[in-house]
Image (tube, rainbow, N blue to C red; front, side, top):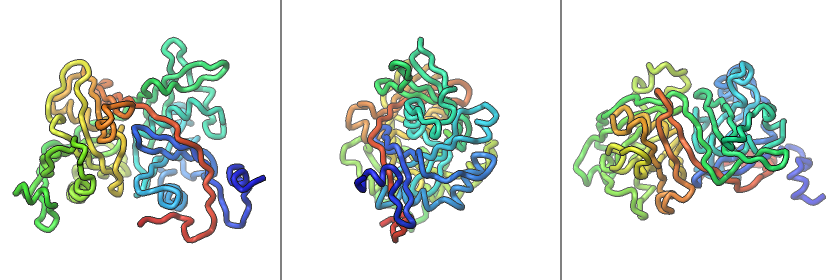
Length: 389
C-alpha cells in the first residue's frame, strides 16, 4: 500500500499521527470543510455545552483544520454532531458546530446550504445516523432536514432526485433554509469614532461618526452603507478589500463593546455578541418592489476579519429582517443578494435569495458544490495546531 492510500485509509501509523477526514464544498465561492471522520466524541448534554467542550478541550483540531498549512485565514468548517438534545427529543435530525479562524459561530447559512446537500447524498450512517428518517417528497422533488445549529433548529429543503434506489441532491436547484427568529436589534445607531481610530476615507469625508444598524439572523451583524464609511462604490471591480477591512475592524470594535445592543432579546447568553460587519451598497436603503427585486450587494467581514466569498446566509436573514423592520421590503418580495464575487459574474450560481417566511422568519436560498474529499495527516510537529502569519 502506498503512502497516499495509507493516509486515506487511516492506516498511517507513525507515533503521534492522527487522520481527520473531511468533505470539501463551496457555496458561492465560500469554502466549507465538513469533518466526517476522526473528530473525538463531544461531551455535554446540550449542543451549546458541546460547543463549549469543543472550545475548551478540542480547539487544537479546529486550529489544525482552519489555519495554515492545511487551511487559511478565510477557511470555514463544520463539525457534524449526531446527538444533541434536539435530536433526542425528535425536534431535529442532526446537529452541527460551525468553526472559523476565531472560534465557533452560532449560525452559518452558506455552510447550512452545503451540509444540506451532503446529508442527503451520504449513505454512511456513522456520519448521519438518522439518514433513513429523512423524508423525500417525490412530487416536489425535495428532501427536508431539520438541522440543529447552536442558535436553534433550522429547516433545510434540499432539491433531490431519485437515482435507482438512492435519493441524491440536485445541484441544479437552490437549497433553501428557513432561519431561526430573525430581527432588527437596533436601527440608526450613531457610532462616534475617536480621532485615533479614524480610517483615511472617513477623514477625507470630514466625518467623525457613522450610522449603522444591528440585526440578528442566527448571529448578530452590523449592517452599514458604504457611504457611511467614506467609500463610494463597493460594486466596482476595483474595491479595495484591505481598506474596507481596516474600516470594518474599527466599527466592529466600537459596536461590539456596546453589550446592551445584544442583550435582552430572549437569546442564550452565548449568542449575545457581534459576529460580523456587512458593508452594503446604497441599494440597501431603497424599498424593494413586488416580485424579485434587483440584487443587493454586500461584503461581510466576520470572526477575526475573515472575508465571506458568499453573500452570507445568516447575514441575508439579518438583512431581510432589517429591511422589513424599516418598511423597505414587502412580504411578497424576493430579493437577490450578491457578494462582490457573484456580482462580478452576474449572479451566476453564486447569489443568494432572501424572502419573508412568516413572522420573524426568513427563507434563504443558494447553491453549494463539492470540491473534493481530504484525509489530513496530523503528525506531532510544530505545525500540528496550525499557524497564522
